[in-house]
Image 1 (cartoon, rainbow, N blue to C red):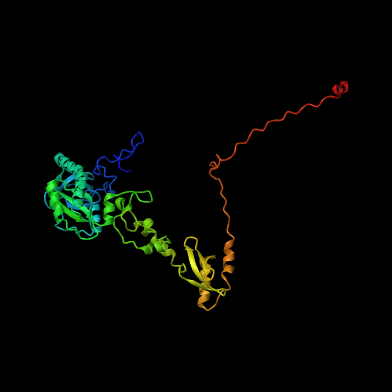
Image 2: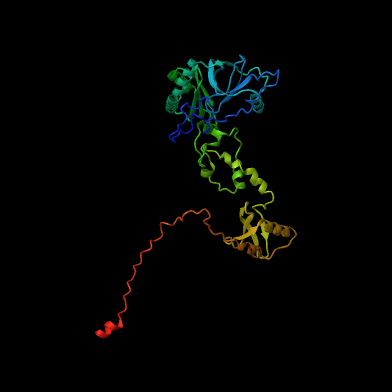
Length: 386
């Protein structure tokens, strides 16, 4: 990891983030922005931008106005304005890059409703904040028990405390509308705080909780992905993937976001490719496309009467046959074209790296051959004496 407090120790063991994502280095948090303008000074007469970006639990980031002209840097813990009371967060970006981020997220620079920063957090503020963060898991477990006892069809996925500990926001997912009025009353009575319920989608739930995907890496939505684009089964069809819901769905239960990563390349490659439902007219009969390989530019066709026998054709050959069919001509058969593609180069394995054979332990040991002692021939003198 980039974070110095989470990196591997001297003994080779990973130390892990013991600050629950609130360390001052801010190197292992989601969407960490590198301030590449930090070493550059402003032109003469220009004042520094008065807005800063503050990060809260998980991926929630908001912009605040520095009305008190505090000297802030990345990693400072600050007390910010809230609807009631104050919240505590970590500064993630300052300077002119905040102006760019606000334009990117379509936040008006002259908006007077932007909340402000009160002060740098004192030790008392940090202690209250950490104490509230430690209570979140216990309260989340207890709130789920209350929801189950009320037989509500909802799932409480995460809890976020306000910095002063006066309010807690509960994030939940549900298929339909849920009447949680009694739930709020029971939780407010049990915890003694103000309750706010906020419904999120299944993708946002996976983004907040995180996890490991089927590829073996951390989820894209919890590490770097900023927006959720719609994913359809057409993306899988263009990439010739099997429409298996168990393999195409992520941990959120929706189609994986990575299905859109290479989609543009496939669409560009398919522009000059024959359609998958094309039919070739031959004198032997009508042929249908059974399979296509975009990277090798190869298609497999079979006759209507012989669906089990496939013939390999290149993309150029198929386009040539389709062009002849448009003119009303028919080719003799697909075998004439497929015969040119049968002779393929046979690739043999060459041990260029010098690795040992995988079957080296399976070879029988050569038994030592016993040397036969040759008898010396008897001399003629000894034979005559007898």
